[in-house]
Length: 421
View 1 (cartoon, rainbow, N blue to C red):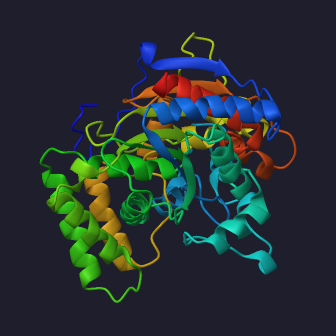
View 2: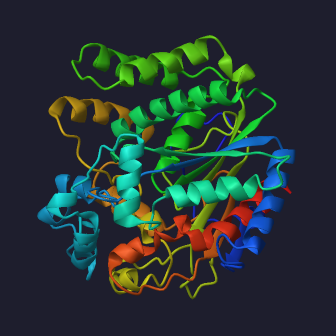
Protein backbone atom coordinates (compact mmCIF):
# COMPACT_ATOMS: atom_id res chain seq x y z
CA UNK A 1 0.00 0.00 0.00
CA UNK A 2 1.17 3.60 -0.51
CA UNK A 3 2.26 5.40 2.63
CA UNK A 4 -0.65 7.87 2.35
CA UNK A 5 -3.23 5.09 2.24
CA UNK A 6 -6.31 7.34 2.54
CA UNK A 7 -8.57 4.61 4.01
CA UNK A 8 -8.09 2.18 1.12
CA UNK A 9 -8.71 -1.48 1.87
CA UNK A 10 -5.79 -3.90 2.03
CA UNK A 11 -5.15 -5.97 -1.05
CA UNK A 12 -5.45 -9.75 -0.81
CA UNK A 13 -2.17 -10.41 -2.50
CA UNK A 14 -0.85 -13.96 -2.71
CA UNK A 15 2.60 -12.80 -3.79
CA UNK A 16 5.64 -13.69 -1.69
CA UNK A 17 6.20 -10.98 0.98
CA UNK A 18 9.92 -11.65 0.70
CA UNK A 19 12.08 -10.30 3.49
CA UNK A 20 9.07 -8.77 5.22
CA UNK A 21 8.19 -12.18 6.68
CA UNK A 22 10.01 -14.33 9.24
CA UNK A 23 9.05 -17.88 10.26
CA UNK A 24 9.38 -18.90 13.92
CA UNK A 25 8.32 -21.57 16.39
CA UNK A 26 7.30 -20.70 19.93
CA UNK A 27 9.96 -21.40 22.54
CA UNK A 28 8.35 -20.68 25.93
CA UNK A 29 11.64 -20.33 27.86
CA UNK A 30 11.52 -19.52 31.57
CA UNK A 31 8.29 -20.02 33.50
CA UNK A 32 6.22 -16.87 34.15
CA UNK A 33 7.21 -14.83 37.21
CA UNK A 34 10.42 -16.77 37.90
CA UNK A 35 13.63 -14.75 38.36
CA UNK A 36 14.88 -15.85 34.92
CA UNK A 37 11.60 -14.71 33.33
CA UNK A 38 11.81 -11.35 35.10
CA UNK A 39 15.44 -10.87 34.08
CA UNK A 40 14.79 -11.66 30.41
CA UNK A 41 11.88 -9.22 30.24
CA UNK A 42 13.95 -6.66 32.11
CA UNK A 43 16.52 -6.75 29.31
CA UNK A 44 13.72 -6.28 26.78
CA UNK A 45 12.36 -3.42 28.86
CA UNK A 46 15.69 -1.61 28.84
CA UNK A 47 15.84 -1.89 25.04
CA UNK A 48 12.31 -0.48 24.79
CA UNK A 49 13.13 2.37 27.14
CA UNK A 50 16.37 3.20 25.30
CA UNK A 51 14.29 3.34 22.08
CA UNK A 52 11.95 5.91 23.61
CA UNK A 53 9.04 3.62 24.56
CA UNK A 54 7.35 4.83 27.73
CA UNK A 55 4.03 3.01 27.54
CA UNK A 56 2.68 -0.30 26.28
CA UNK A 57 -1.05 -0.28 25.56
CA UNK A 58 -2.71 -3.70 25.40
CA UNK A 59 -5.69 -3.29 23.08
CA UNK A 60 -8.23 -6.12 23.07
CA UNK A 61 -11.85 -7.22 23.02
CA UNK A 62 -13.64 -10.44 23.91
CA UNK A 63 -15.31 -13.31 22.09
CA UNK A 64 -17.99 -13.77 24.75
CA UNK A 65 -21.36 -13.08 23.16
CA UNK A 66 -19.58 -11.86 20.03
CA UNK A 67 -19.77 -13.10 16.45
CA UNK A 68 -16.02 -13.29 15.93
CA UNK A 69 -16.27 -14.70 12.39
CA UNK A 70 -18.91 -12.18 11.29
CA UNK A 71 -21.25 -14.95 10.15
CA UNK A 72 -24.25 -12.76 10.88
CA UNK A 73 -23.48 -10.58 7.88
CA UNK A 74 -22.88 -13.59 5.66
CA UNK A 75 -26.26 -15.08 6.55
CA UNK A 76 -28.01 -11.71 6.30
CA UNK A 77 -26.67 -11.30 2.79
CA UNK A 78 -27.91 -14.72 1.75
CA UNK A 79 -25.26 -17.35 2.29
CA UNK A 80 -26.81 -20.78 2.33
CA UNK A 81 -30.29 -19.36 1.88
CA UNK A 82 -29.49 -18.47 -1.72
CA UNK A 83 -27.71 -21.71 -2.44
CA UNK A 84 -24.21 -20.37 -2.97
CA UNK A 85 -22.75 -23.49 -1.41
CA UNK A 86 -23.95 -25.67 -4.31
CA UNK A 87 -21.08 -27.21 -6.17
CA UNK A 88 -18.63 -26.66 -3.28
CA UNK A 89 -18.76 -29.81 -1.12
CA UNK A 90 -18.22 -29.13 2.57
CA UNK A 91 -19.00 -25.42 2.50
CA UNK A 92 -22.25 -25.88 4.41
CA UNK A 93 -20.32 -27.49 7.27
CA UNK A 94 -17.79 -24.65 7.26
CA UNK A 95 -20.50 -21.99 7.52
CA UNK A 96 -22.09 -23.93 10.39
CA UNK A 97 -18.77 -23.65 12.25
CA UNK A 98 -18.63 -19.90 11.67
CA UNK A 99 -21.99 -19.17 13.28
CA UNK A 100 -22.02 -18.20 16.98
CA UNK A 101 -21.18 -21.32 18.94
CA UNK A 102 -21.22 -22.50 22.54
CA UNK A 103 -17.83 -20.97 23.32
CA UNK A 104 -19.28 -17.52 22.63
CA UNK A 105 -22.07 -17.87 25.16
CA UNK A 106 -22.25 -17.44 28.92
CA UNK A 107 -24.53 -19.03 31.44
CA UNK A 108 -27.51 -16.86 32.22
CA UNK A 109 -26.17 -15.96 35.66
CA UNK A 110 -22.87 -14.74 34.17
CA UNK A 111 -24.22 -13.00 31.08
CA UNK A 112 -21.80 -10.50 29.58
CA UNK A 113 -22.07 -9.42 25.97
CA UNK A 114 -20.94 -6.55 23.71
CA UNK A 115 -20.77 -3.64 23.70
CA UNK A 116 -18.20 -3.90 26.50
CA UNK A 117 -17.42 -0.73 28.47
CA UNK A 118 -13.75 -0.01 29.09
CA UNK A 119 -13.96 -0.19 32.87
CA UNK A 120 -12.35 -2.22 35.65
CA UNK A 121 -15.52 -4.13 36.52
CA UNK A 122 -15.93 -5.49 32.99
CA UNK A 123 -12.24 -6.36 32.68
CA UNK A 124 -12.32 -8.18 36.03
CA UNK A 125 -15.41 -10.14 34.99
CA UNK A 126 -13.80 -11.18 31.71
CA UNK A 127 -10.67 -12.27 33.60
CA UNK A 128 -12.83 -14.50 35.78
CA UNK A 129 -14.76 -16.02 32.89
CA UNK A 130 -12.11 -16.60 30.21
CA UNK A 131 -8.74 -16.15 31.98
CA UNK A 132 -5.98 -15.61 29.41
CA UNK A 133 -7.73 -17.19 26.40
CA UNK A 134 -7.91 -14.35 23.90
CA UNK A 135 -7.93 -11.94 26.86
CA UNK A 136 -5.21 -9.71 28.32
CA UNK A 137 -5.65 -10.35 32.03
CA UNK A 138 -4.72 -8.03 34.88
CA UNK A 139 -2.03 -10.57 35.79
CA UNK A 140 -0.59 -10.32 32.26
CA UNK A 141 -0.63 -6.53 32.31
CA UNK A 142 0.89 -6.18 35.78
CA UNK A 143 3.45 -8.92 35.20
CA UNK A 144 4.57 -7.31 31.95
CA UNK A 145 4.84 -3.86 33.51
CA UNK A 146 6.77 -5.06 36.56
CA UNK A 147 9.19 -7.16 34.51
CA UNK A 148 9.83 -4.54 31.81
CA UNK A 149 10.52 -1.97 34.53
CA UNK A 150 12.53 -4.29 36.77
CA UNK A 151 15.82 -2.49 36.13
CA UNK A 152 14.45 0.51 38.03
CA UNK A 153 16.04 3.04 35.72
CA UNK A 154 13.72 2.27 32.79
CA UNK A 155 10.09 2.41 33.96
CA UNK A 156 7.46 1.53 31.37
CA UNK A 157 3.75 1.85 32.03
CA UNK A 158 1.44 -0.93 30.78
CA UNK A 159 -2.30 -0.36 30.48
CA UNK A 160 -5.24 -2.37 29.15
CA UNK A 161 -7.82 -0.87 26.83
CA UNK A 162 -10.94 -2.95 26.26
CA UNK A 163 -12.86 -2.06 23.11
CA UNK A 164 -16.58 -2.63 22.67
CA UNK A 165 -16.16 -5.69 20.41
CA UNK A 166 -19.01 -4.50 18.18
CA UNK A 167 -17.86 -6.09 14.95
CA UNK A 168 -19.00 -3.82 12.14
CA UNK A 169 -17.60 -0.70 10.50
CA UNK A 170 -19.57 1.73 12.67
CA UNK A 171 -18.67 -0.11 15.86
CA UNK A 172 -14.98 -0.09 14.99
CA UNK A 173 -15.13 3.57 13.98
CA UNK A 174 -16.67 4.54 17.32
CA UNK A 175 -14.04 2.48 19.13
CA UNK A 176 -11.26 4.22 17.17
CA UNK A 177 -12.46 7.61 18.39
CA UNK A 178 -12.52 6.27 21.95
CA UNK A 179 -9.01 4.86 21.53
CA UNK A 180 -7.60 8.27 20.58
CA UNK A 181 -9.45 9.80 23.54
CA UNK A 182 -7.74 7.26 25.84
CA UNK A 183 -4.33 7.82 24.27
CA UNK A 184 -4.65 11.59 24.67
CA UNK A 185 -5.64 11.18 28.30
CA UNK A 186 -2.67 8.88 28.97
CA UNK A 187 -0.30 11.24 27.17
CA UNK A 188 -1.31 14.03 29.53
CA UNK A 189 -1.22 11.82 32.61
CA UNK A 190 2.22 10.39 31.85
CA UNK A 191 3.61 13.67 30.44
CA UNK A 192 4.56 12.13 27.09
CA UNK A 193 5.77 14.18 24.14
CA UNK A 194 6.94 13.82 20.56
CA UNK A 195 10.26 12.33 21.72
CA UNK A 196 8.51 9.34 23.27
CA UNK A 197 6.94 6.23 21.77
CA UNK A 198 3.83 4.26 22.68
CA UNK A 199 3.74 0.58 21.77
CA UNK A 200 0.20 -0.59 20.96
CA UNK A 201 -0.19 -4.38 21.06
CA UNK A 202 -3.60 -5.20 19.58
CA UNK A 203 -5.24 -8.61 19.62
CA UNK A 204 -7.57 -9.78 16.87
CA UNK A 205 -10.19 -7.37 15.59
CA UNK A 206 -8.81 -4.69 17.89
CA UNK A 207 -6.00 -4.30 15.38
CA UNK A 208 -8.54 -2.85 12.95
CA UNK A 209 -8.91 0.14 15.29
CA UNK A 210 -5.19 0.85 15.01
CA UNK A 211 -5.41 0.60 11.21
CA UNK A 212 -8.27 3.10 11.13
CA UNK A 213 -6.41 5.39 13.54
CA UNK A 214 -3.33 5.33 11.28
CA UNK A 215 -5.48 6.68 8.43
CA UNK A 216 -7.02 9.40 10.59
CA UNK A 217 -3.59 10.53 11.83
CA UNK A 218 -1.97 10.68 8.40
CA UNK A 219 -0.47 14.16 7.86
CA UNK A 220 -1.64 14.52 4.26
CA UNK A 221 -4.94 16.06 3.19
CA UNK A 222 -7.73 13.51 2.88
CA UNK A 223 -11.16 14.11 1.40
CA UNK A 224 -12.20 10.62 2.58
CA UNK A 225 -11.33 11.52 6.17
CA UNK A 226 -13.31 14.74 5.94
CA UNK A 227 -16.28 12.91 4.46
CA UNK A 228 -16.25 10.20 7.11
CA UNK A 229 -16.08 12.70 9.96
CA UNK A 230 -18.88 14.77 8.46
CA UNK A 231 -21.16 11.77 7.90
CA UNK A 232 -20.68 10.38 11.40
CA UNK A 233 -20.90 13.84 12.99
CA UNK A 234 -24.23 14.57 11.31
CA UNK A 235 -25.64 11.22 12.38
CA UNK A 236 -24.80 11.60 16.07
CA UNK A 237 -25.63 15.30 16.28
CA UNK A 238 -29.20 14.32 15.37
CA UNK A 239 -29.29 11.30 17.66
CA UNK A 240 -30.48 10.99 21.25
CA UNK A 241 -27.93 8.22 21.86
CA UNK A 242 -26.21 8.91 25.21
CA UNK A 243 -22.90 7.33 24.16
CA UNK A 244 -19.92 9.73 24.25
CA UNK A 245 -19.05 9.08 20.60
CA UNK A 246 -19.90 12.62 19.47
CA UNK A 247 -17.58 14.12 22.09
CA UNK A 248 -14.79 11.72 21.05
CA UNK A 249 -15.37 12.62 17.41
CA UNK A 250 -15.07 16.32 18.22
CA UNK A 251 -11.84 15.63 20.12
CA UNK A 252 -10.43 13.96 17.01
CA UNK A 253 -11.44 16.90 14.83
CA UNK A 254 -9.78 19.28 17.31
CA UNK A 255 -6.68 17.06 17.39
CA UNK A 256 -6.39 17.29 13.60
CA UNK A 257 -7.30 20.98 13.32
CA UNK A 258 -4.70 22.07 15.88
CA UNK A 259 -2.01 19.70 14.58
CA UNK A 260 -1.55 18.06 17.97
CA UNK A 261 0.37 15.22 16.34
CA UNK A 262 3.42 17.51 16.39
CA UNK A 263 3.65 17.08 20.18
CA UNK A 264 2.13 13.57 20.35
CA UNK A 265 4.21 10.45 21.03
CA UNK A 266 4.97 8.16 18.09
CA UNK A 267 2.57 5.20 17.94
CA UNK A 268 4.21 1.86 17.13
CA UNK A 269 1.73 -0.94 16.44
CA UNK A 270 1.91 -4.72 16.80
CA UNK A 271 -1.11 -6.78 15.74
CA UNK A 272 -1.78 -10.31 17.00
CA UNK A 273 -3.92 -12.39 14.67
CA UNK A 274 -5.61 -9.35 13.13
CA UNK A 275 -7.40 -10.29 9.90
CA UNK A 276 -6.31 -8.52 6.71
CA UNK A 277 -8.98 -5.85 6.18
CA UNK A 278 -8.36 -2.11 6.55
CA UNK A 279 -5.26 -0.68 4.91
CA UNK A 280 -2.54 1.05 6.92
CA UNK A 281 -1.32 4.63 6.52
CA UNK A 282 2.29 4.25 7.52
CA UNK A 283 2.71 8.04 7.61
CA UNK A 284 0.28 8.17 10.55
CA UNK A 285 2.18 5.79 12.84
CA UNK A 286 5.71 4.67 13.57
CA UNK A 287 6.75 1.02 13.35
CA UNK A 288 4.36 -1.75 12.27
CA UNK A 289 4.57 -5.49 12.96
CA UNK A 290 2.08 -8.36 12.56
CA UNK A 291 2.20 -11.68 14.43
CA UNK A 292 0.10 -14.58 13.15
CA UNK A 293 -0.31 -18.10 14.51
CA UNK A 294 0.52 -20.16 11.42
CA UNK A 295 1.51 -23.68 10.48
CA UNK A 296 1.99 -24.25 6.74
CA UNK A 297 -0.15 -27.07 5.32
CA UNK A 298 0.35 -26.39 1.64
CA UNK A 299 2.22 -28.68 -0.73
CA UNK A 300 3.17 -25.97 -3.23
CA UNK A 301 5.95 -24.37 -1.17
CA UNK A 302 4.04 -21.12 -0.57
CA UNK A 303 4.55 -21.15 3.18
CA UNK A 304 3.28 -17.59 3.65
CA UNK A 305 -0.26 -18.63 2.65
CA UNK A 306 -2.89 -20.39 4.74
CA UNK A 307 -4.70 -23.52 3.54
CA UNK A 308 -6.43 -22.77 0.25
CA UNK A 309 -9.14 -25.48 0.05
CA UNK A 310 -11.83 -24.02 2.33
CA UNK A 311 -14.19 -27.02 2.65
CA UNK A 312 -11.37 -29.22 3.98
CA UNK A 313 -10.57 -26.87 6.83
CA UNK A 314 -13.77 -27.94 8.59
CA UNK A 315 -11.78 -30.95 9.77
CA UNK A 316 -8.70 -28.87 10.56
CA UNK A 317 -10.27 -26.05 12.59
CA UNK A 318 -11.18 -27.92 15.82
CA UNK A 319 -7.63 -29.32 15.93
CA UNK A 320 -5.97 -26.00 14.98
CA UNK A 321 -3.86 -27.78 12.38
CA UNK A 322 -3.15 -24.68 10.28
CA UNK A 323 -2.92 -21.98 12.96
CA UNK A 324 -5.32 -19.06 13.44
CA UNK A 325 -8.54 -19.67 11.51
CA UNK A 326 -10.21 -16.48 12.79
CA UNK A 327 -7.40 -14.57 11.10
CA UNK A 328 -8.04 -16.45 7.87
CA UNK A 329 -11.84 -16.29 7.74
CA UNK A 330 -12.96 -13.05 9.44
CA UNK A 331 -12.10 -11.04 6.34
CA UNK A 332 -13.94 -8.62 4.06
CA UNK A 333 -17.74 -9.03 3.92
CA UNK A 334 -17.94 -10.58 7.39
CA UNK A 335 -19.37 -8.71 10.43
CA UNK A 336 -22.44 -8.58 12.60
CA UNK A 337 -25.56 -6.77 11.42
CA UNK A 338 -26.14 -3.38 13.13
CA UNK A 339 -28.90 -3.25 15.73
CA UNK A 340 -31.10 -0.56 14.14
CA UNK A 341 -32.07 0.43 10.58
CA UNK A 342 -30.48 3.85 11.14
CA UNK A 343 -27.16 2.30 12.16
CA UNK A 344 -27.33 -0.11 9.25
CA UNK A 345 -27.77 2.78 6.83
CA UNK A 346 -24.78 4.59 8.29
CA UNK A 347 -22.76 1.37 8.33
CA UNK A 348 -23.51 0.87 4.65
CA UNK A 349 -22.21 4.37 3.90
CA UNK A 350 -19.02 3.63 5.83
CA UNK A 351 -18.60 0.34 4.00
CA UNK A 352 -18.67 2.16 0.66
CA UNK A 353 -15.64 4.16 1.81
CA UNK A 354 -13.78 1.51 3.79
CA UNK A 355 -14.39 -1.90 2.29
CA UNK A 356 -15.67 -2.34 -1.26
CA UNK A 357 -16.40 -6.02 -0.66
CA UNK A 358 -20.03 -6.86 -0.12
CA UNK A 359 -21.78 -10.19 -0.41
CA UNK A 360 -21.28 -13.86 0.13
CA UNK A 361 -19.39 -14.38 -3.13
CA UNK A 362 -16.93 -11.62 -2.20
CA UNK A 363 -16.27 -13.20 1.19
CA UNK A 364 -15.65 -16.57 -0.45
CA UNK A 365 -13.27 -14.95 -2.92
CA UNK A 366 -11.33 -13.11 -0.18
CA UNK A 367 -11.18 -16.12 2.14
CA UNK A 368 -9.78 -18.30 -0.62
CA UNK A 369 -6.99 -15.82 -1.31
CA UNK A 370 -5.74 -16.82 2.13
CA UNK A 371 -3.05 -14.18 2.60
CA UNK A 372 -1.36 -14.18 6.02
CA UNK A 373 0.75 -11.03 5.71
CA UNK A 374 -0.81 -7.58 5.24
CA UNK A 375 0.55 -5.26 2.57
CA UNK A 376 2.46 -3.08 5.06
CA UNK A 377 4.81 -3.74 7.94
CA UNK A 378 6.91 -6.70 9.01
CA UNK A 379 5.25 -10.07 9.62
CA UNK A 380 6.17 -12.91 11.98
CA UNK A 381 4.47 -16.21 11.14
CA UNK A 382 4.79 -18.19 14.35
CA UNK A 383 3.87 -21.78 15.15
CA UNK A 384 2.47 -21.26 18.65
CA UNK A 385 2.35 -25.04 19.26
CA UNK A 386 -1.29 -24.81 20.34
CA UNK A 387 -2.70 -28.20 19.40
CA UNK A 388 -6.48 -28.37 19.53
CA UNK A 389 -7.13 -30.21 22.77
CA UNK A 390 -10.30 -29.89 24.81
CA UNK A 391 -13.28 -27.67 23.97
CA UNK A 392 -13.10 -24.94 21.35
CA UNK A 393 -13.13 -22.30 24.09
CA UNK A 394 -9.61 -23.40 25.02
CA UNK A 395 -8.09 -22.37 21.68
CA UNK A 396 -10.75 -20.34 19.77
CA UNK A 397 -9.69 -21.99 16.53
CA UNK A 398 -6.09 -20.87 17.00
CA UNK A 399 -6.95 -17.31 18.05
CA UNK A 400 -6.41 -17.60 21.84
CA UNK A 401 -2.67 -18.24 21.95
CA UNK A 402 -1.41 -14.66 21.70
CA UNK A 403 -2.59 -13.52 25.15
CA UNK A 404 -1.44 -16.49 27.21
CA UNK A 405 1.04 -15.91 29.99
CA UNK A 406 3.06 -18.82 28.62
CA UNK A 407 3.57 -16.89 25.36
CA UNK A 408 4.37 -13.52 26.93
CA UNK A 409 8.16 -13.82 27.22
CA UNK A 410 8.79 -15.27 23.75
CA UNK A 411 6.35 -12.89 22.09
CA UNK A 412 7.73 -9.79 23.81
CA UNK A 413 11.30 -10.68 22.95
CA UNK A 414 10.38 -11.19 19.29
CA UNK A 415 8.59 -7.84 19.18
CA UNK A 416 11.56 -6.05 20.69
CA UNK A 417 13.98 -7.83 18.36
CA UNK A 418 11.93 -7.05 15.25
CA UNK A 419 11.20 -3.39 16.00
CA UNK A 420 13.89 -2.00 18.31
CA UNK A 421 17.10 -3.99 18.03
